[in-house]
Amino acid sequence: MDTIERLIAIFQKFPGIGPRQAQRFVQFLLRSPPSMRRELIELLQSLGGAVKQCAQCMRFSSSSGKTCSMCSNPERNQKLLAVVAVDADISALERGGTYRGLYFVLGGTISLASEKTNNLRIKQLFDSLPQRIHAGLEEVILAFPANPEGDATAIQVREKLTEVLSPLLTITALGRGLSTGSELEYADPETIKSALESRR
Ligand SMILES: [Zn+2]
Image (cartoon, rainbow, N blue to C red; front, side, top):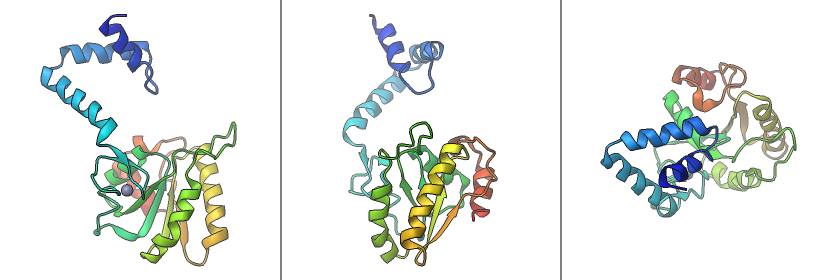
């Protein structure tokens, strides 16, 4: 395979990318200035080294410390913890512009086909709670996508949290300002804002 074919083959492995889109990416890169390709190369290389998973929220970041810039920011509201499915949902909530609390990335949602939860960080979330409560945590916000998998995940996490920590913590979920089926990462800032305000 030549360089172009190999690149197309790699882009095709990306989630949601078919052969036509993969080809368009390569064409785009071919037309891009060399400076952009250099930046892309540098960023890809640093993914292996500089980017680490935050020990507290579990998101990937290029922070040099053990925890990411959000977890170590004293300005963030320690009373609030939003539990999200994936890293991209943090950016979505941040775009809403009103949430200033902390985050925890669960690593996905429950798969309804297999009901498997073993790849989710439910245990890590629970293990982190005593320390978070000590630091002032009052409310856990379940911020999962508005689809059956997201709902199932919210029900299960809520049940477990209530069982163990009901007098200590308030547990809420995003309000349904989000249209059904919508992924947080595609929601506009206004929708995110109202989903946060109408949480219950
Ligand atoms: Zn973090």
